[in-house]
Image (cartoon, rainbow over the protein chains, first blue to last red):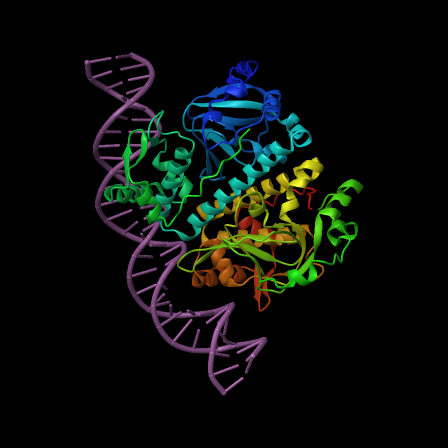
Length: 253
Length: 253
DNA sequence: CGCGGTGTTGACAGGCTTCAAGCTGTGTGG
DNA sequence: CCACACAGCTTGAAGCCTGTCAACACCGCG
């Protein structure tokens, strides 16, 4: 898995100062010192095809990643083969932060599309805390943000009906993609399968299918061969009784 | 809510060096410098009765807390009045960390028993990152730990049956209490109500009641007027197919 | 004493799962 | 070019798990 790592990580293709993410409004600006630090911290880049397992449950790699482009998801697999999706991974997110902070990895991460990643060495991670208080704070901020998202997800699983859960999930992913301006460029759909939606929401595929059909009949989404197209984001939010989080300028490494 | 704050926070009763939590094996030792820093950061202490709302959703206080003694829980309330419990708060945990890092509070925290808290000022929070890389790292570690717990909780809600969920929740809380040596002293039971269990697991009270009864019939727990008494922790873990996390020396502030 | 919070139990309905089969589109190899 | 496999989507029918409604017992407390 991720054979490309070895071959590509020697070469730093993109200079951090020219990182495409830096142009996006949602991400905060770095000063020169921070930029220089991240550049020295970065080991290289790698590309993963759709369907690649970047990190798998139980294993450990010496690397920590950040996502430059592409979609992925975090999940756990049970002994009986079932899996539970925990959250989705988009540009600007860390991959492997939990494992870097603690001992080993307790979940897997898999790509949904081609994904470009920046590669860092875990060993050097602690340098951030020693040398850059602002970046150290950013990392804590990012962890707290993930915590909030998981809180919301728990509310979804605990209190919402199947229809509301589906609406929430799609609205949530749509909003995240919109925030980082993902839609103008590649395509305006979410790269999901119904099996994935089911594994995220704790539903069976059969019932997920019927539920998504209801959303489509109401004119809120359209299900295409490429995944899920959002037709009426506001309608989804209203159905799920969910209000999108307020816009904040967020950090990334 | 928490009227005591104003009156008690001037006086620092307990010196951080003599903090009772420091005697517990599960918590890591601080060096002199760290101790000194925490002492300078701490504003005072406060005590909250059982059933007190320490922080409530949407509001904002200038304070950040850590728990010295007692039980509490984090939850969100919906517009229709229902609530979803997100996690439980025990000695060594932060209260209000999310809100300190980000803008406002998106959940409430309420006590289940009398609780003693240490009080810190949010404004000074960033000083940790500037002055103590090790403590800054600890905070990030604590955030990552919370993330893991929430991951597990999502697995529970998404994949487990009512019986397994109940078993998991009780085993999880039992393990947390055991780790910090909470059982020898006050009482060997978890201060839960069935309504609370229901709100944690996304079940109705009625069904929670029947499910807990099954656990009792199997000789795994006993439900007393004071809450839930764990009879067979291993049995609960096995039923939930859950393995307690490996023991690690954890930080606290 | 009455009241509210908590636990308990029964009956019934319904949301969701499971099993099972068929459909579509895509890719692969003969 | 067709045959075939395969993955994802679709649909029907049967049944269980869980929610809802309703009533009652228990207990501590003002």
